[in-house]
Amino acid sequence: MQSVKELKRHPSPGGKPQPLAALGGLLYVGSLETSTIYGIEPGAWEVRSEIASPGKPYGMAVLGGTIRVVVSIGEADDRYLYTFVPGKGFDESSKMALPELTGSHLASDGTSLYLLQIGKRKIVTLDAVGAVAKETALPQRIAGVGVAGGRLYGLAGDEEFEHLHLATIDLAGAQAVVTDVASISDEARALTHDGNVWWTSYRDENQIGSFAV
Image (cartoon, rainbow, N blue to C red; front, side, top):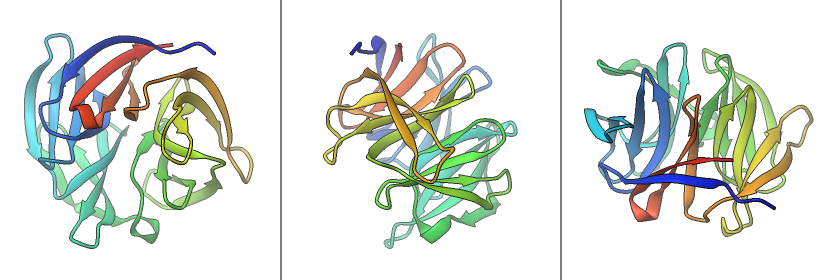
C-alpha cells in the first residue's frame, strides 16, 4: 500500500494540538494544553488570532460559515458543542450537550456534522442544529475524521492507534465500511482538508503537518 506524501511540518503555537479547521484562508488549530484556538496563515505560518476556548477543544469542523467546536468542560470531562465565530469568539448561547456527554473529533460535509465517539466506537451524524440523525458503529478505532470531495475520511488504526491509515468511511449501513487508502504516521491525530491539501496534528510532537495522497 502507498503512503501519504508528507509536505510540510510546522511547530504548533500551543502545546498538544488536536482539532483543525480551514476557513477564510486560515487554518484554525485548537490546543489541549492552552485551551486556545489559533488562527494561522498557512503560507507564512503566522498566528493571526488567538481566542480562549471555554474548555479543552477536542474537535472542530466548518458549518454554515462558522466553526463548530467540541469542548471538554469541568473535571467530569463532559463534552459540549459550541459555535465559534472567527473574529468574534465563542457564542456562549450556542452551548449544547453532546449525546451521552461524549465525543471528540468532528467533521462536516457542509450539511451534517460527524461526531467521533472513540470509546463507544461509533460516529454520530448530527444535523445543522445538532440533533442526532443517525448512529453508526465502527469496526475499528479511528483517530480523526475529515471530509474531502464529499467523502468522509478517517485515521484508522488498531486498538493502540498504531498502523494508522488514511481511510474512507462509508456510513450507509448500520456499521461503517472503512477502506484503507494510504498509510500515515502513527503520531497523526485529527484531519481537515483545506480544498487543496490535508492537514493533521502530530499532537505529542507539538507539530502540524500537511500531506497529500
